[in-house]
Image (cartoon, rainbow, N blue to C red):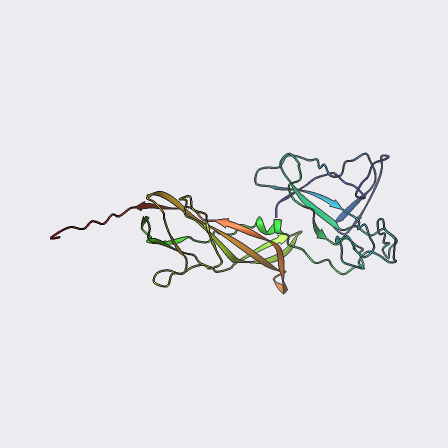
Length: 277
């Protein structure tokens, strides 16, 4: 996943005082500690290219022992009960434990447009390896192929008042990617289909992928004649495996794809009684 790292660093949810900095490294992580007049929720950095997703990263210490605020799993950080405030933990080597890492998406002007999402558990070198988390943002950024939109009649013509049959292929898609440098296999499964006939009717939303004639299950007529563009938007849910093995983990969130428009010319047919046809 492409991501631009913004350089604003804060040792706690709010930091504002002197200009004294120290740093140390642990594995692939560099931790900067110190005090500075910094507004942590306003990221800074270069404006990304249009094809780059820009994130603001921040380590946020849990506010209560046991993760009562929902940021970390109960018992992960605290070594003793506390009455509140920031939970502190010291690693076996005497250094402070890393707080959990969170990120949020920002736009080209560095204005937050997404919620904080936890991407690692922080902790100490002696902790078991943290499990990689595939977020809804990661899932939505995958190059999923749109579901093919099939209609019958399939020659680009239809008759007003007569059903247009619609169907698609419900086969899941499997994609390999990396998250935080770890290989991940993601399975995307279509779960809902939104057919927009482009004629002013509300889109037809269904969990049924439909079938072709004569076993059709998804169909709806056009109301009036005209030229219309039919599109299919598919909603996908996902699961992932780390390194292609182990259990499948659900992804919290969905992704959508939209097919190329299928052009339809709708005509009206009028019947007349005649003598001696």
